[in-house]
Image 1 (cartoon, rainbow, N blue to C red):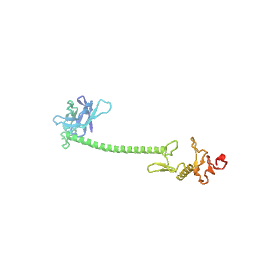
Image 2 (image 1 turned 135 degrees about the vertical axis):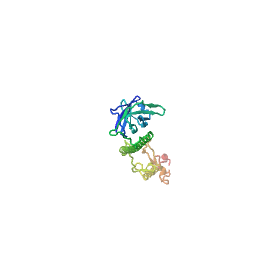
Image 3 (image 1 turned 90 degrees about the horizontal axis):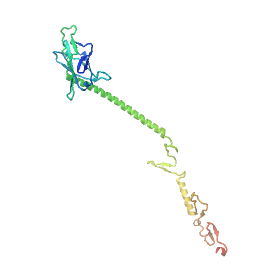
Image 4 (image 1 turned 180 degrees about the vertical axis):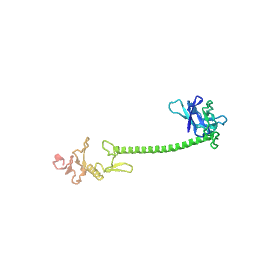
Length: 294
């Protein structure tokens, strides 16, 4: 397909190709590439109209896109030349125009940047009757459907990309969670010491309830039975001895003595002939009347 470049400078349309002639009766093999010098054309839904003297003008939609980078030309568009305007030798007029939603109208000045020359070896050739140019409405519909198809493809592509993104995120989250678990196990899943925290195991002498309450089943290695024996010994000492304890250390003093009530000699210790003195000693109450009064 041969491409003829047209320039829209200001409001004028002019050719920018060395070859500006199309061959009569050509169909669908010539196109124009239009370059715009101002980005204002991007703000309008544009159409391009081709016409020849004595032929009904043919109008087609023109999809304009931005030209990236630093350049004199700000936008571009490409469209096929309709065969209806290549039916006779002579100039081809080209008009580009658009009207936006606010009623603003932009249009190029009259210009004939292209022309038609006679086809070779055919003096009275006829145009094919079964290849009419698609009218503007059907062309817009076809363009819209093409865009819908592109959007459908884009949607499928985005869904695939989102699946990949979600999978990658889940994998990253799982890896992060595993890393946290590993760190916890490495740093904290160690036996506790006097200086560092760690896992505490329940040893002998301890009991843990279903509620997590820890209690002792032995105190300093003393069993329940042994504790009862100590309690009995303490009671025995209380009932049988008069004792004193050091206020500072709590230790038993050496002046413990047997209680009189603890000595089962009530018949023998009558207080007359046998008595228990103030030191807890059993003594005979025998002596002179002057010394003892007995």
